[in-house]
Length: 231
Image: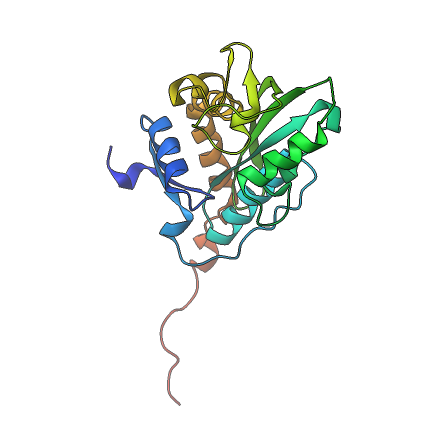
């Protein structure tokens, strides 16, 4: 299908890996998926929401309004039962603004020291918004537990200490294919992809509704468009 018949959607990220993942997922649909680097500079979105849903919607809505086209954004993180859901929306900066993955893991294990309840879950929310504000939401979760020591060389974030019983290994020990099948993000993406044909119809309908109505030219039928006569 030619690009002229594809709906342009921006993925609110500058991460090329994430863009490729979404493009591969939606390759059979009539969409031209771009990322923020394909456009001029726009302000960074401050992710100050109280929930993953808040942050995903804020990023998608802000980007859609700024660029005037539909936008997709996601937010995810780790929620630990014994820590009342922490680190939650602060997962990426749990040990500070410029914290590394190792810093965050070290703080998490310190907070859980001596704690018998190690239950935890990764959560992901994907938001698809149009410039006028409305959005669709898709969610995915994966339950596991936090180990006392890191295991595995793969993955990122908290993967080395997140143990998934179904695989009897941590996310950092699992292959990318294994992880994508059961991960929080994988589930949210799969749910979105399953009904993306409906998503496209919804997007096109919302975009059509946002366009101003065509002028009623009948009101100009009897106007005299000739130049005024010189006196």
